[in-house]
Image (cartoon, rainbow, N blue to C red; front, side, top):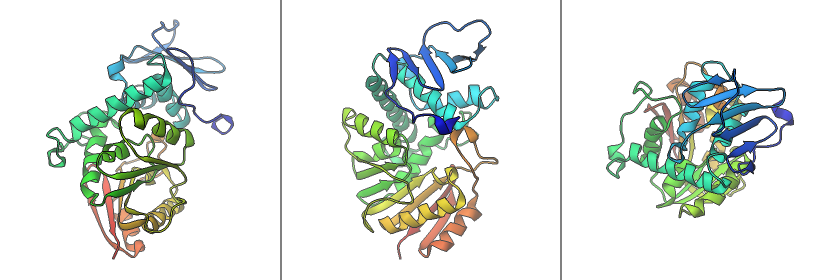
Length: 306
């Protein structure tokens, strides 16, 4: 089904408070029909054409914790499945949360960045980052899980210019944008265009680039540091190796790779393989650069140009 669907349009509101595409129909507020599946946050039902979702989330609840909430309440129990459906439902919840899509996304981004700053730098410094790991009681994929990853990644960036590969929504790039020259890149065109439209409204400046992380249209050594945070688990092994090689080509000084540690790939997030420190070390040995691996809320590979 996903092969014939049009790409997700983050601005596709059919009316205020409603998002609808070829697969999902998401509304804010209306009561669900009898027989709908009900969870603490959502009501879900299906017909021959759509998965319908109704929610009553307030503006202050619209941040990237939606991903963890949708995964925990609807996908982990097995009610729904598939990364395509997951991404469209999250998009629909955001777009349906305000009268105008751009306003909805700006609210989503502001809430997310504010929460990440509170979690990762409660004292306005990376040294204050909390140790909120997978056993800290939060939902997998939540901001509490990502905040220490972003804090640690920032501590590993020592150059002014930074390229993020596979930036998705671009939260890490935006967190760096105030003090670095940042380029965010992703293969999903509409996600990159969304980031480019939202950033000015947040008072932040960055470049947004649409490309495969293994084929970036920039010269050698363009960036001081290249980062790939939670990207390789989405890619087949050969593609992942090509991404690391491309990061080395583009980096003047350092490449930083982060991956989650999972027993099984999380399908709702589009993960296709798992990692451990030994697999990261294999990438390090093959790089020809100085390298190290360590564990901190997942696994890390740091490559430094000799």
